[in-house]
Image 1 (cartoon, rainbow, N blue to C red):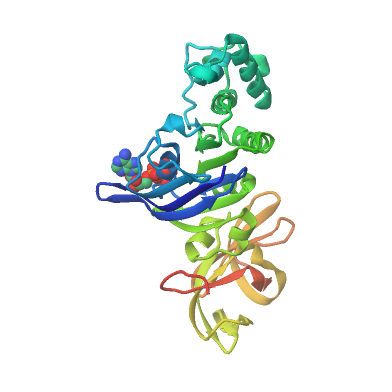
Image 2 (tube, rainbow, N blue to C red):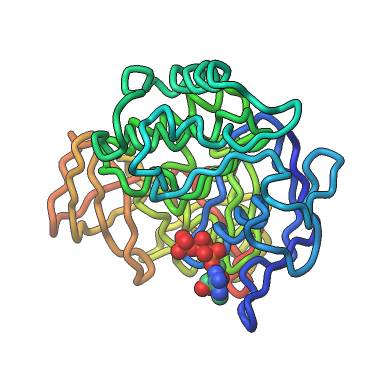
Length: 348
Ligand code: ATP
């Protein structure tokens, strides 16, 4: 089910939580709504669900305008951060619960409900836990039940609001792969809200990155990381984050500290905010910098030094000898450097 948003806006009194958002959420794909706390991603998700009404603009599911349609008429599955399972019901009863209030031709008998519950339980791999109560399950298992319950009605759209944030780091990583597998197997159009860039980067087909209610960029993970449209996008994605420094371009040359610099093409003379990804730096000869800090991560190390008066981070191979106080020599891969308008933040 392709979802189209046209000028979608939500105001809570003086706060504009979602501000004239227009975008297309592709059919059968996993879309991540990403952004810092308060950027409006949950509000956007709840407008898709119908639980939050729209101030302005419209929502289409396929060709159908669902802007004012009640939640139960939208054929959506919703999974919340806190699972929201019924504690007195078994896993199977929880999963089958949404099938209970169907009428007319959609009404299901007990056997049909059991079969539907078993089908999704198998998909999320909890078929052996059907008789347990929620409190007899781990957090990851509870979240699987919540996903099964959301899928049992074969929704056109699955909406997930920070579904993994109550899980510890390792389980979170495991469950995010599970969400991806379940989405690929069920092929359901899925919208996944998260503030965790790594989560969004690792499992989605496309990312919608928001700031203050406005969409900054919509693109697949690789594209949004490699081609950020502005300084906010560049800074939100990447760990360790990109470093920004003031830089002047004159005659195709970028001047940095102590006569060091590099050549660029296609960038007009002027002042810029230069973004350098940490992986842009590699051992070499062009730049001589004094190491201020080394953070060993195992597979690599984050080496910090100053350039143009600003702290810059480089990720270097763990075997490379970098000691605090010593000068090291590095080259710069300029395809991981980005020039932004220093006032607007827009990429040039
Ligand atoms: P988080 O990651 O912290 O959940 P979010 O990106 O999901 O943040 P929203 O919950 O959508 O952000 O909130 C967007 C803005 O709207 C915030 O400024 C928030 O305070 C405001 N807001 C959200 N719900 C309401 C409400 N019911 N009444 C008033 N303001 C609200």
